[in-house]
Image 1: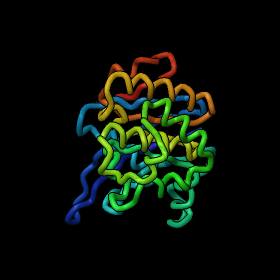
Image 2: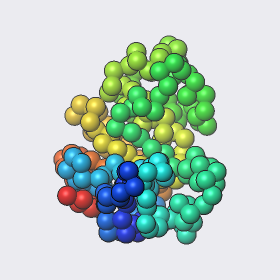
Image 3: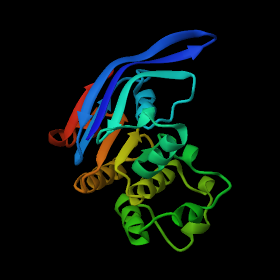
Image 4: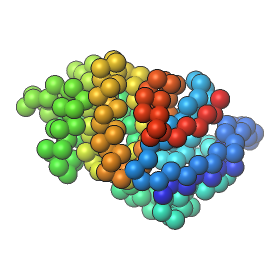
Amino acid sequence: MLLVNIKNISLKRNEKSSIILSNVNFITNRGERLVILGRNGSGKTTLLKAVADLLDDSFIIDGVVSLDGTEYLNLKQQERVNFRREKIGVIFQDPFSSLDPLKKLGYYMKFVPDQEIFNLYLEKLGFEHSKKTENLLPYELSTGMAQKFQIALNFAMDKEIYLLDEPTSALDSISINKLNELLVEVENSEKIIITVTQDKGFAHKFSANFLTISLC
């Protein structure tokens, strides 16, 4: 179970603080997909980074984020880093921000524990994979293909929590449907999936399986 109880998140600049988000509370269990809907600039990505412990020191979080009773934001710095690496997968809106432009795709693929599952996820997302793929540099991919690679790579790493930031922004309608199908498959493996999006169609496609929080 993931519990998020944040009184506020504030940003400190020039000795002054301004509140970015306040009174955010939710609980989501394994095997559930939570969608956070909100307009551009409403704080969705900030919340996602807070849950992933990716905010820098200029942000102050007053609250609790815990997984199965472990309040990991209160751990020591290296313990938090280790927790995030082991438990949390983050899929960024800009896939190139998580890929080193000087490292070939094969560099990332060698960290995947099960290559067959990774290849299967690539196939399900419509990523045209071949033996040449590992020799490609990120800039040789379109934004959509880079997003598919990032999604497949993260899910193949078999984390407990997955945080998706506007995952459909670089995908066409066919690819979005493929992503939805993959999310159902991952959901059935008892993962916690949190997606922030402005895409109401994507959010409600499987409305029976989604919780919705509006930060508008």
